[in-house]
Length: 120
Image (cartoon, rainbow, N blue to C red):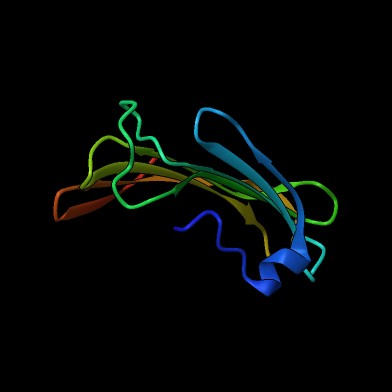
């Protein structure tokens, strides 16, 4: 992802952007449906090497209009073709009430991708 490219729709919904000296960018985005997205981007992998393809999303959290966490994604890049992503999604009952979170992990090693359910 090219970090300096900001499309018009992103510029209109971008509430805050912070750039840190260690190559990390934090963005807060407000969506039209009253959700807030907090996104952290980095150009360094988990080993401290510069990521070869620009910036990647290290974490993203989506909140509803009440401030409750709806979904979170945490990503660790351990090499140019290896990464581990942990996803946490809200689980609701048929009435729309919060029950708990579904958590799973996506592991990518070279060309192999595996999804592991962490709820069991």
